[in-house]
Amino acid sequence: MKAKKNPELEVGRNSSLYFAIGLNLMLLLSWSALEYRTYEKDDYVMEVLDVEYKIEDDIPIVKMKNPTPPPPPPASAPEVIEIIEDAQDIEETVIESTEVGQNDAIEAFEVVDVDAVEVVEVEEEVEVAFALIEDVPVFPGCEGLNRAKAVKCFQEKMQDHVLKNFQYPEAAMQLGIQGRVSVVFVIDPNGYTTNIRSRGPDKILEKEAERIVSLLPKMIPGKQRGKPVKVTYGVPIYFKYQAN
Image (cartoon, rainbow, N blue to C red; front, top):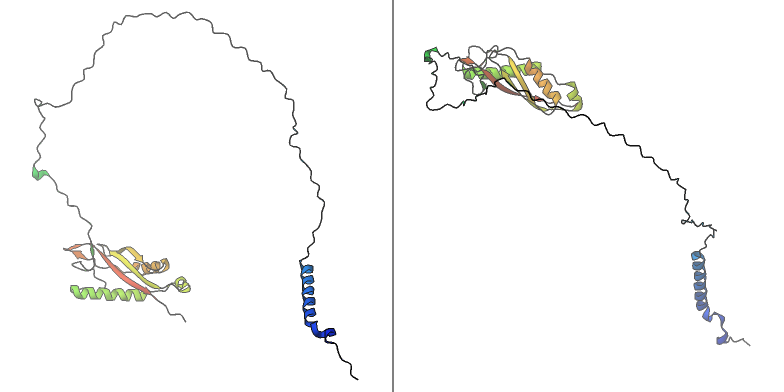
């Protein structure tokens, strides 16, 4: 004979419900334990400051003695005014007018003859550009040429001079400085190079370009209308190097 189970007494029928309720209770207890906080209780002694208490010092009363005023000065005798008769005659100064009227004669000046006037010629310092000068300055070795050939010879000699005296500054090479330097200078009426000016990317290159131009030899000065004058000339100098 087999034993029959009572369906109303089956224990595993509501096991999932019980498991869910138990899990929720455990989660609630865990959350409560994590959120529980405690505080330290310290006893603080607070003192009350009495601001109404004032310390009053007795300030003694000092009586100031006023100094006795000085006595009034003694009354002096009245001064006696003596009247002296002035027997000297006073000459009055007469101020005459300095304005010239129509009836006043005008003193004639000495008439100077025109031939007696000496005319002094003042030479003006004329500065003419190289491209506009009538007779260009002559570089040593370019004598006896016409204007076109003299200009070409001057430019060639100038290039040769730059290449001959060119030295790349060591400081500019170390710093990697390169570029074009424009140099402008003046060839004075005596044929010397003066008033050298330069403009470039750095002072080191400008100084070297001015040094090259300062070594130019003495030239035959340029002439305008047959007279030696100052002539301005500009030359570009290129500083460029190739790194190894």
